[in-house]
Image (cartoon, rainbow over all chains, first blue to last red; front, side, top):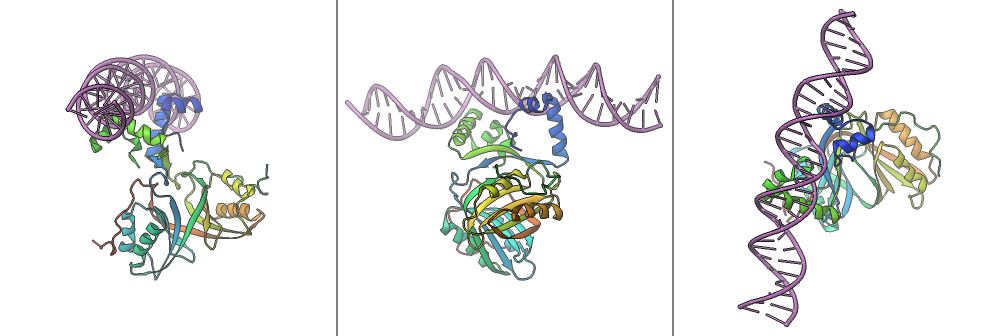
Length: 147
Length: 147
DNA sequence: CCTTGATGCTGAATTCTGTTCGGCAATATC
DNA sequence: GATATTGCCGAACAGAATTCAGCATCAAGG
């Protein structure tokens, strides 16, 4: 959620509770692990990393290795997931430009077990938000109508 | 960055500045657009959406349409990017389970222009962090050594 | 070299927020 | 009916955010 920069009093006004009540609720949510860390979202372009890409990494056998985990040392790497499907791992990376992306990829290829990669360079981002609190329970039977 | 929950005094200790100085710098970074919103990161599993997947969406012609943009109305959809490559769009989605993912995908398929999709269901997440402030300038010529 | 202006920092002060705690109400259990 | 639990509120206190005057540094102009 994006209220993390607001005061408990301001949030309380929205949900009809006092500041201490909001404070206690948030405390419980943190303790339950629902709420994790509080972060400031940075702008990729403004931090000198305008080029976002998703990199699919194919590996022989089981992909996870200590070497591959070392990729986390690069601040350009934001996400690393192992996936089911025709690829082994998906990385979300953000680099200074094509050359930096190439540098990053070259770090991948010297890792034993990595056989191929496919990069999907992002042209435009239409949505980028963190985990949302809500869950859809009543899926529409028909598609959402165009307004 | 993850200092967003720290006080200006604490951050100041780390960087050798007073709290007001940190405050003014952060103010400038916000104004410059480097720092965006302050958010609390929620845990997918704890919010009832343990199943993370990347969905590649193929479209005829140019993929972006108003209908496709309507997918943002589902809280399950966290990211939407158009990409260069053999697919048109990549979505990062987080659902309650395989059935909910299917529901979400079914919303995709009734959109004119959407021809195919491929879902990469995440098995494990090894790294998940926001945009990092740092940029790698000196790429190692050789891969990072294993410790 | 001196003067002026701009920039950014510090410390103090003020204002605001976070946090604790006692009291109370509602609900559940025995 | 009594007791325990849960969660909220208001008051109070501690800590943090924010403002502001003063100062230091640096750059530009005369």
